[in-house]
Image 1 (tube, rainbow, N blue to C red):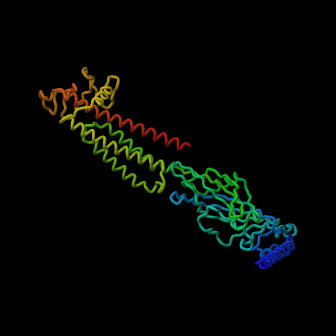
Image 2 (image 1 turned 90 degrees about the vertical axis):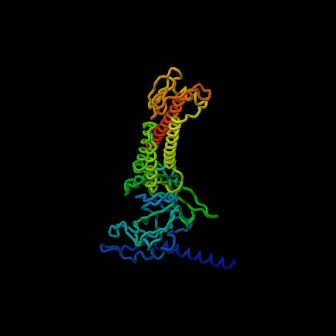
Image 3 (image 1 turned 135 degrees about the vertical axis):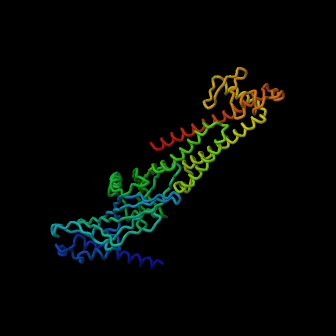
Length: 447
């Protein structure tokens, strides 16, 4: 084993020495006789092309510095279910090739050449978060300057993993990362730097943006972490890409129709409680709201809990509660005209406080009652306190009910007033819910 290591080490040492000697021999020695007005003779770069499989350095102890920049030209898709961000960017890599140099004055004033990238050494820069194979087109070229500066641009469609938080959908902002690193060269062999400042990358991305879709770019920041794999340490550049969803589409198609249906359901409380049309009207609204939720299911996030889903659930629950309350009040008013049940003392006291002269009910016509301060409500078939169902009250029907001190007619009025009080309470809940919803939407939209 020791002999094998010594043999292998000797071979690598000889190979490195050979490359270094050849590198020194070919550095700054490109023959300008191959440059003319008709083109460039490829044989003048043949010695450089032959060494494309090795990192171009004169001293292997010196790391190669790769400067990185990119232009984010499009945000194609954000998949909340798979937690993926699909974007299109132009990646730019810049490094120095020490074996390429010529004097422009002696070479027909040529300062830059385009050379097929497959003939040059290329750094193995990749995006750590990428979840797809790099589909770089074949036949790309790199620009080589007379001082050995190599500029390599390539288009990339990047599908990267991103931790998406959709709770504030459709007013959500996401912060995704694009981390550039090498999977072969450690920091002893390759260092990463910036070809442009971050603000220049941001400006170029905004100026060259090709899409005006659902997402917009907010900002780009960077960090320089190190990636440790075993005992090896790799240099990295991490870019934080902040994006924001444009909510206008969802406000128009989701929030506005839902708010209209809830507002109409709230206005249905102005229908008389004893009317036979209120319950069918509310049932129709509830059915329409369910159809609306089915039609918009493809616009909502497939996974996770979002604020708008909670809003829709509250709207549906409120409409169901309103329908149940209407059914209960309708049944209560029907029961009051036939055989009014006895009333608990606490509910009697609450109604007396609710119907005091300082309390006004805008949906119920009021008539002062000097005995109990009650409100006489005229139902169909209940013409006046002394007449029930179109018939005069008999002696037994006029007796005190359960020792409460109330006649049957007065008890009917109290149960009717209880039904109207429930209507008022639920109507106030509707108004509070609508006001809170509108305020929340305006705050989230403005921020």
